[in-house]
Image (cartoon, rainbow, N blue to C red; front, side):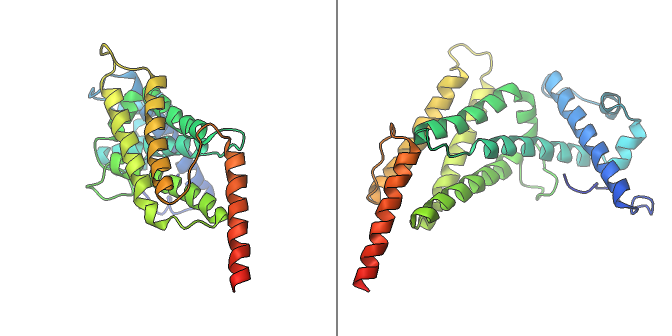
Length: 253
């Protein structure tokens, strides 16, 4: 969590212990605000007094932690965004016993489940500025960027291990992140409508879309993957191919 916003008085410029105390208070206030957002209908006004009471603090304490109501709301959006991105990052685990399709599905299911369990927080986060970012950015664009970068970091780490240059494919992770955000937003917006697919169906739709995009571009570069093969087997085969290429290069040198 960032340092508390309001640091104008000499008392606030005190010890690290005081700053830690303020940070803990901010977290409590933000958690309380998110809880109230999720309990109330979308668009319903939530007062500072309600947030303070939920946090077990005086209203004046809330005012001291943030510059104004807009500043508080921007911090709430940042808090929601961080929670969302952390869920995605935690799901990005390459289990060698699972197929690539199963790994992708775990990520997609995590995203869909989080949004379905927090629809009002998800929508609140999409409307308005986010603390620490430009005023014209929303959590949609920021979240898309952060998720894409998390995906790219994992993808390039795996590719580097195999000696494969994937820099030219970087735009694809932004395309996947945008696809996911668009479908999940539409899924949340149709809550309660007849014929709305369930979470599992949406997650599998996203998985299939991501898989076909990945497999198609891989095939264009001469790599052909079987979605039913565990990633451990696939990586072992690719590592063997990389070693053969290095031996061949060394022999020709």
